[in-house]
Length: 125
Image (cartoon, rainbow, N blue to C red):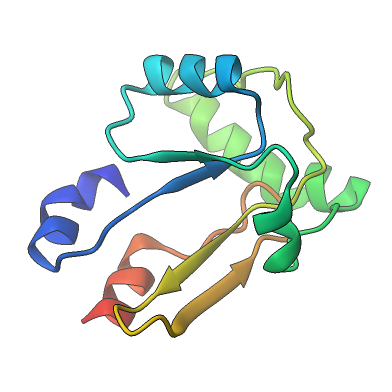
């Protein structure tokens, strides 16, 4: 997503990252990743619940797609990082238009299940 930041800005797309982690862990994430987008902390997980992003199953988290992504990252020299958070919390992507209408509502089946940035840009265009 960050690779397309210039295009997102040109299209006037505002990105926000939502986490359920506490303030300290969220700050660590911002520092570790040099995140420039706003981060919203949802410790009660009301946003997650509202968008139907409930708990994932064991196989959603540790299935074939996840290992595929981990393997590709290891080939690039990146080691998987141990999570200090709830790995069973589903993630997802929500794209809301300027009119307040949800244009994309994707609930991830696991950590590797995300729409591509190109798909998101296609919807925006």
